[in-house]
Image (cartoon, rainbow, N blue to C red; front, top):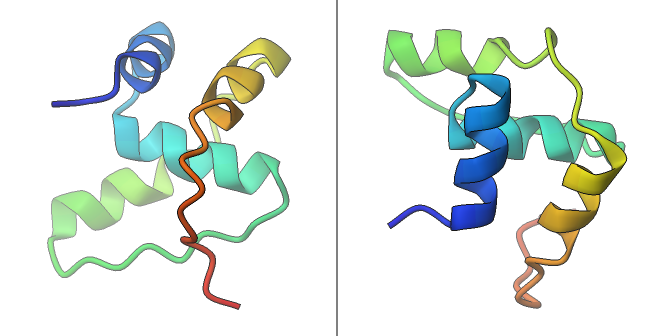
Length: 73
């Protein structure tokens, strides 16, 4: 089941949850490197440059922190 915060933000922008997460990382200065062999997913992953998250949306997503490490560097 999708997170309601992410679902709300995705709906507001007409984007998928994945696109919102990729955009959130990009706006934080993290270069996301998504992987997929599905051509539709690859195309979707590139369609994150035509919208920006608001400061409030960035904060709402950051508040979802569950202390899980997903940055492998």
